[in-house]
Length: 238
Image (cartoon, rainbow, N blue to C red; front, side, top):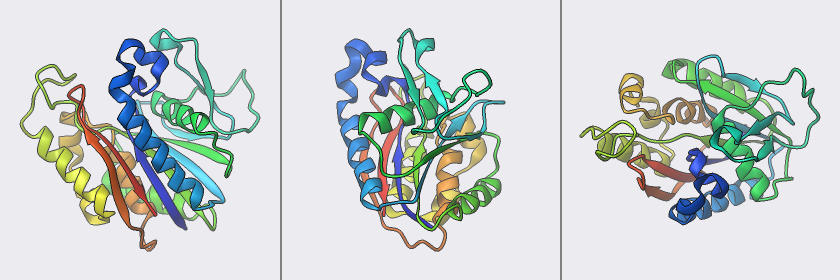
């Protein structure tokens, strides 16, 4: 059963070495992520599953010890998902979102439970997301989720998706749902609108909603901002 969840954004800019001179702009988000991970540790889970968006063909399960890298962003920095062994010759690299999740865990010194990963492709329907979440919630007696994903990327004219007047209301609805641990509200987020607004968080958030069914968790919104025209949200459920 799901006992706790942390919801964090997943831009590579969250990693200071990638952000370089802009690193201070994400300090508040990093601090909120640290607080959310502290809630996971306090829940004493048997298993932590990191769930994040993945591009086409990048989705699926990633075992303990799977590796990711930020070399594609010009930084010689590698990360690992937990402490498991892996076959470097055949293992798939973590998608960017899970690499950010692995970095967050390494940064906070996570050693509280085994770690696995799941990359969720944006084509997953809300129904399939909920079903996947239910499966994850049943993986152990005490399951925790680290859920990665961003809100809309259309909050300003300089945002990656330019300005769309629907972006702010979409992000506000997601923030309210995460703050209240409102499962029906999360599952009602429109997949088509999320794609239009370039929101990578829709599928991971709906997986969380499925995992939380019957868990009776309370939510708390720790951070909400759009420093680059992209909606970043941090929440904790316990």
